[in-house]
Length: 222
Image 1: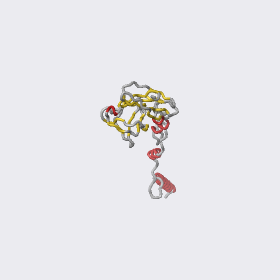
Image 2 (image 1 turned 60 degrees about the vertical axis):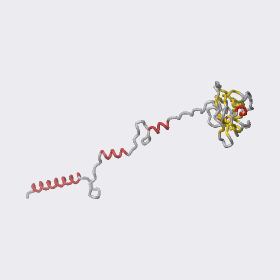
Image 3 (image 1 turned 180 degrees about the horizontal axis):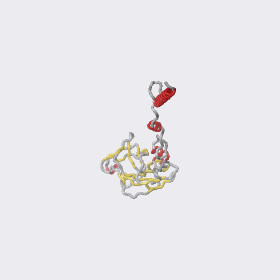
Image 4 (image 1 turned 30 degrees about the horizontal axis):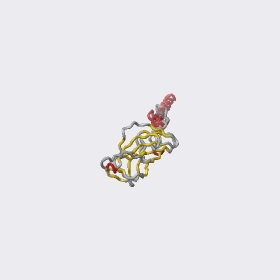
């Protein structure tokens, strides 16, 4: 074989070796278990991005509901005053004035006095009920007279009175009972005040057994 033929053969073998090395490199590296590593893909990059909290369109931090953030940033409205200028049960004391009988009627002033440090108002009728020692009501609910209402302004220490009247049982012949107390509820209130009843028997059933009321006026009714 000539030198020229040997040179050509060596060149061919060298080219073949280089080609084999290129093929091996193109197959990628081995992970140690015989499996070739796959090249990174776009989906792998997207999966990594979804693990990061994404701000919402409103600019608040991710994972926090938009309405929760807006509620926490919105100042709450100031509470409105309850009851206005009305006198509340807790600000008042109650009493029953002296009987002023006439024409077969027993007439008592039911007096409420402002014990608070503010000026308040009363308008309308008191709620009233005669009760026994156990708190059970005696007799029917009172009737209200058809009289114009007046708003009574009470400065601290001032009083207003409402009239309570009923027919004398000895004249009317109504059945009677002796109450332990009179419950008095200020207008538009729910909690009553209890006044010990010291005026004897009241009508509770039969003819002329109704108790009548007139609305509040300034003073004590004396």
